[in-house]
Amino acid sequence: MSHKYQRFADFYPYYLSEHQDNVCRRLHFIGSSLIIMLIIYAVMNSQLALLWFIPVLGYGFAWVGHFFFEHNKPATFTYPFYSFLGDWVMFKDMLTGKIKF
Image (cartoon, rainbow, N blue to C red; front, side):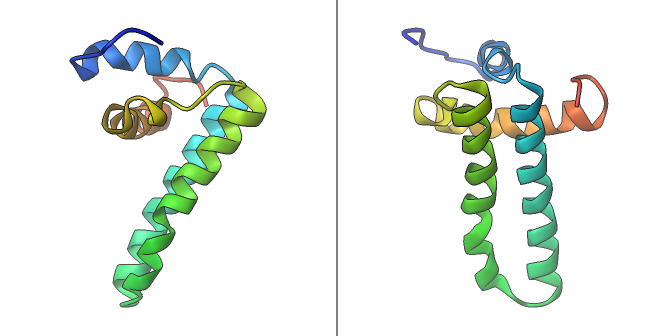
């Protein structure tokens, strides 16, 4: 990828093109859901040390999706901030039905 994205609005269509496989998208969704549940659990039970598992859940599920199903390199390696935003926008879009689950 030689394109340099300056705005998230320009990056997001590229991000979605890297997530065409249903299993990859579902793994992203599962990882993001587990992150939300982990944060709620950790805060409600004063177990803040558990928050160290956020990257394992988020990146673990996503990278399995990319390496084994999508067969591409995660955008996180090139665009970490936009990719992070893309994960949550795609999560929202899947939750609302804008993107197929």
